[in-house]
Length: 380
Image (cartoon, rainbow, N blue to C red; front, side, top):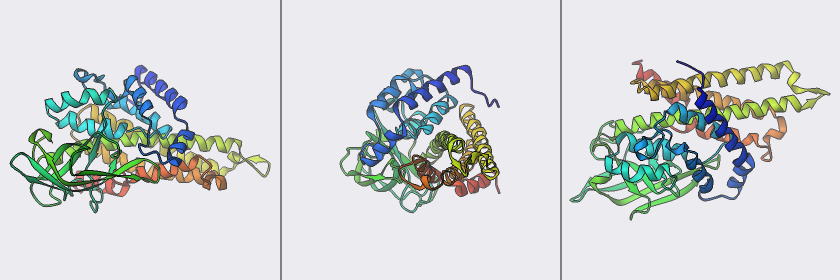
């Protein structure tokens, strides 16, 4: 496994880094949070990201994509993480678009993927439920068979970028018990469908999330993504890709928090000397650097596993999430502490990273969940 970016990826990284620096300073993130912007991101920047080709990196050329790999997407996502950019690339491209690419019908792909790649269509994935505690197979939302299709009833929680989306892919139980791995079906629904309501939520990091309620929402056979009763395996595959992509974002964020802390250690003086000269802080900074580089190795390996079509992707996804969750929380905590009293104030930007670390840690399962999943994958 090569842990070196190609010449093309280095160019992509430079472009993404310059884009983030020019268009999305942390002042912008603060303004979005303070204004309680209902969308939570910029449609204009989203359109520019589409024009740069980023939304189509992993999609086939037949739909307007670039037919590259997740290792290339990783380069962009990491840079977006550096700037804490809230644009819905994870939810629309990796989760929604991933579900359509892996399990969608030819008609669904032809109708939706070009608009998604052009930045005109947003797609969210609603799979979590109250009380499910990271388990994607705990599905109580029910899809009752009707003469013309199905009628969906239930509640979905923590839907990433669910407010303002155009389409929502919903997991519902079509057979079996509430926690069985089989009997789950994915349905593609219009966000404006009768009986479907979306309640906006703000997470502590200011990101867009939603509660989606389904009260007898109608779905036709053409709305099924994948096969009836077999959506669990499709959902697991999509979530593994989403977990790996989230880890790339976390890597970018922890790297930015580390760089910000090192800059502070080089400029802040106490007792007439730079605090970066204190041995104890040097040791803590070294620990932060080591954790960042270990996370980087795991992130790169996981993205390459996706591109190689590895059967053990679940192994890489859980290993990487456990590593990145621990590392990001540690680095954010250390960054805050080494900034001292000013780091505790809302006026200082370092606080945005500790908030994002807490949310990212819990998204798709925390470190403890993924260590346990890793053990189960290996038969322990």
